[in-house]
Image (cartoon, rainbow, N blue to C red; front, top):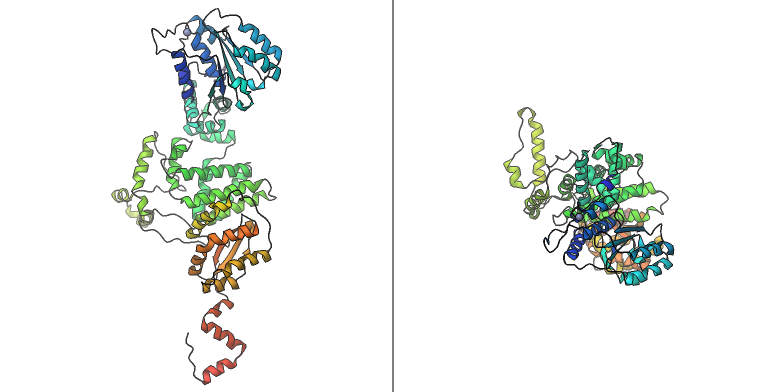
Length: 603
Ligand SMILES: [Zn+2]
């Protein structure tokens, strides 16, 4: 460590071959050199730290290399690194390359000095290359002074302009340049390069740790390398996942896996305890929401091998997502994402941010606990294919999932062939284990049990599907954020309109007419019915009802929750017997009449 050179400099690529994540661009440049189609001026645009200046330098070095002889050896387009020109480049002593940082040298005088040098032809090599970094920072006068030279440069001059802000470049300059858009470098590319650097530096580094660094760098290799350097010195050369989590202050995947596990088991308490743990470790709520949103999105895209590659994580974490994803229905994940998103939007304006998040979490538990999606028969044949496809991309041994994590869903045959090993002394234990596996592979769709979670909302799948319907219709477009406040009175008036429209369903009609709607938080209107049949009938009408409420009350956040309640005294009046009893209570003579005349009521 005595002559410590930062990795970003030490491992700066010296050939096109080693530029990370910009293959399309380096190939085009190589072909241009090969075919003698060099433009007078190039504009390299893209985010910081993705290789613009590096590529410009390699380009300058390559076109000046004395050992590249395209007639003799048309495929050798990489600089030789041994000729006079290459050596002077490597020692930063070449007169053929001029770099100007327009961020700090943006005056007319700076540009004039540069333009004056343009007139002197190169002594060694063929081309003089001018790299102007952050070219959008040039003053208007400097731009104008530069424009003339850019229009008619001597044949031995090449300009490479680089900028992070392409939109600030005036059209007259844009039109004179060949433009290359550099992409953010993918997490995987960065992680792989860090792995290479770590091996060169003889640093022990976990794959997951490197992925985390790559994610944090957000597409910029330079940032990734400087984070890596810092961590190497903090951790004295042992870059583990845990070290990175602590030093970079990132929220561990593990937290989110634990939380979504609890969504399924319906354990509100555990979710709140885990959330508290996160807060106590110093993470703020919004940070958590972003992480949870990403986690839910990752689960959603892990349901299919076609999209699982969008997951920018290490192979072992990908595997974990893959195994977990099938436990959640996409309906649940979509709804949870929506709740998360709403919470994120309202976060800034909320007076009790913590409660806001806790409510969202409780709603997710309410949703999740009702819908543990059993493995449906038609999904089973697809599973082994998915697994196989995943195994192919997996290059490292799969870690055994923690007890809290998802049980691996095995195709039936596989379980049959490898029955759980029975240990005689622990017979009862193995029976339990066997039962559990049976449950997992149960080919019959399990009945959905909605657990009471004490929130007054017991959403069922049928209703959830309507949920997606009501939020996705065209009338919602552009209105999503309108949420006028309304009174119970106004609500009742609009509801009455709806109720009057369903007179053809007398039972539901009467029930809704007698039970007052209850306004809950978040504009949820709770309607009470007496049985599953009524719930189902009302669920069918939910789309129209929600639309009516939203439009009439000018509040597009309104939603309807349907709750099945015990029938009240007044409700029992719908059967003739109930009516008779109620009347008899008011007028006891009725009972006498019935007895004296030995009347039988025809119920
Ligand atoms: Zn050379």
